[in-house]
Image (cartoon, rainbow, N blue to C red; front, top):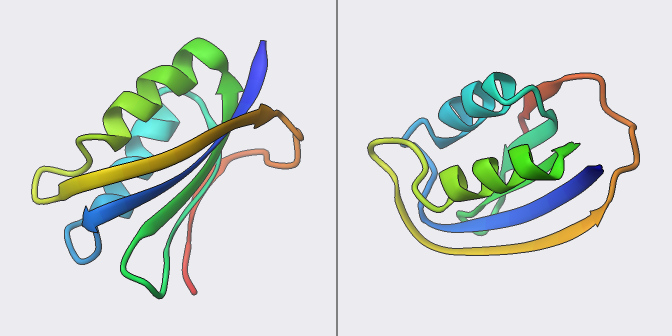
Length: 92
């Protein structure tokens, strides 16, 4: 079953290649969506794919890149919208 995961990740998650590692993991799991830095220092992720793969992705988000320090992950499960064809890094 296709689902959508939206997550906000807090901690030392900017300037530590978090978006890059997130996009690599999403592509490895064949997820679609995006990741972007937020003005408050967090990172926001929208990903769609099979629920089992999204759960693996959520586990990754709790760890992040090797230099990251993840303090908190707020997330919600939604129905997939099928609006994305690939996973990409968004720059704001």
